[in-house]
Amino acid sequence: MKKYLVWIGAMILVMALVSPALAQEDWTKKFTATALWQIWSEWTSKKDFKMNAADQDITTRGVASRINFFLNWGDPKYVRGIIGFEADSTNWGEPTWSNGTGGPNDSTSANPINRMGVRNTDQAQLEIKHAYLEFTIPNTPIMVSPGIQNFAYGGRLFQSMDAPGLKVTAAFAPHQIQAVWWRENEGYATDTDTQRRQSYHVNDYYGLEYKLTQKEFNVYAYGFYQNDLSKDTYSDHPYWIGVGGGFRPGNLNLSGQLVYIGGKRDYVAASAIDVDYSAYAAELLAQFTIGPGLSVAAEGFYASGNDADDTSKGKQYFRPIGSESHSNFGLGRTVFFWMNFSQLGNQHQRQSDFGGMYYGRLNGQFSPLPWLNLSGNYLYIGDTAKGSPGAGKVINSPTGARQDEDKKFIGHEINLITTLKIYQNFTYNIGLAYFLPGDVYDSATKSADNAWAVNTGMQLAF
View 1 (cartoon, rainbow, N blue to C red):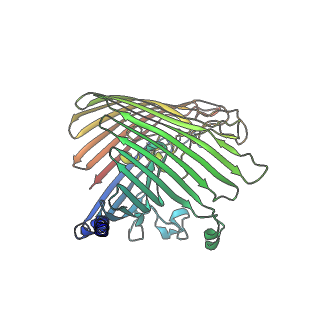
View 2 (view 1 turned 90 degrees about the vertical axis):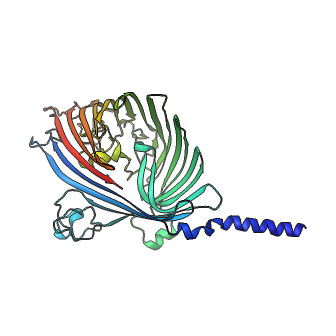
View 3 (view 1 turned 60 degrees about the vertical axis):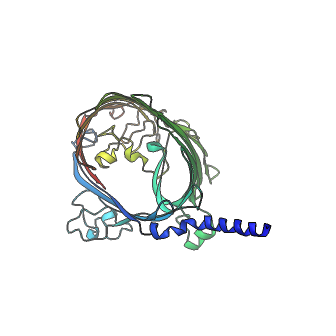
């Protein structure tokens, strides 16, 4: 009898393991496609606050565009393959690749990308963005995703990057745990292909993320470690630990995040001073809905800054090199100073990073009509770096800031972002901004001029 029970048990186990394959006639026929079309315009006056040597009003104008589209084959319940494409134009009318003008436009360039908007557009400009698989381990809640894909963690404060790597996700609703690895570099720039395989001069990231999602609240935590052995002069081993979440009682919506950076950069040369990382960033947002279509919000952000007098400590908050999380750091918040990519593209921003800075923001939103949303912002922006002036020292964080005196006031931004919902999934954003620069941009002999911007973004998703 035992013999028969063993055989029956074995048959049941085999059927359970292969049961997903029994449905392949259905799921293998599934095919979907998604796309995102974006067109932006920029008109910004005095982006450098007339602090150039010629005291000129440098006004920047232009039109840019991007298209992403993704092809999905299979069923995410079992297995599917995803390939994504992208084509960009950084400024309509840019020189063709064969002009030999230098940089990415030059015919000798090794990477002639982002030039879709040339005259006579027949040229190679289609890029591979994603190429990966997703499959569920049979009869488990575990999904495995190997390939070239997006790695996004910590919202706007940490990581957003397309890279080759692996995700392993265990979902136990309302909980989710994800283990992550991606590779950014396989060896020294001077290594041959054979040496890269034989040595281990890599730049890898390893991470773990936990999420808990409920109707009235959510919590998340993550930790990532960088193992960068790809440099000749040093090895880098920072780590990021982040916690955050949201709470939504009634008409009040609270959300926040805290990220700490630790670890160390070890230099090869005995004469060089190793750097211990000790930096952090925090954000807190409170939004209250007054009534249908009407809300107010207050937000604070702080990122630790550099101490120019202590070279053994890395106190300025930083993202992983190449991270694009800053692309939407200003989402819904700024039109001029930081990038607000989803609404207004990536050409308008004055500042590309947010380490060593803080801001306080007040916001009001009003939707008088179902197809119209008005969002007004006021931001007070300051600097958190410190130190005494000196050769080679950075004592003020923003790009283009004076370094002869330690100043703390970066500026005020007042803006209005109007969103028009023209059709379902088709929106048009108009951003108007006025910026009053602080004394961090003044020189010893001249005060920085005020700046303004009118930027737009059109978006279709399907």
